[in-house]
Length: 139
Image (tube, rainbow, N blue to C red):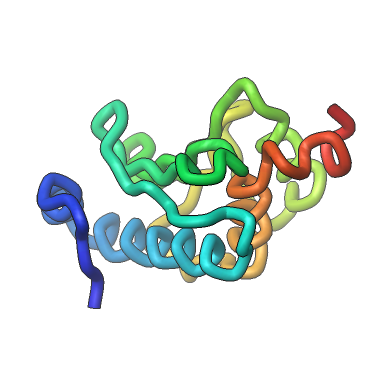
């Protein structure tokens, strides 16, 4: 069962059509699961920014925000801050397994099974980006 702290977020998800809605909710649960595993993340803040569900580490400031939404006519996306090197980093590792849009998003066909292992890595990396960027990304 999915619980929404903010009724406007529940309303936002209810406005998505299938198969977009179920895949976005699956990604949402994956984001929360990844945050729960990494103790340094703390409590995630779920909000709406630019009309999109957004997940931020406001409590610890350990990571960079993650947004999810439709992308184009037939896909969905997980968006990352384009001022980070995250998507570049993910592209180097998962160029054969994932599709990307420039330096800002992982693109997913909602009719296919989610690549859970790869997405867990990417989401977890974003959730601790500020803690790990010197060691992992050479910044």
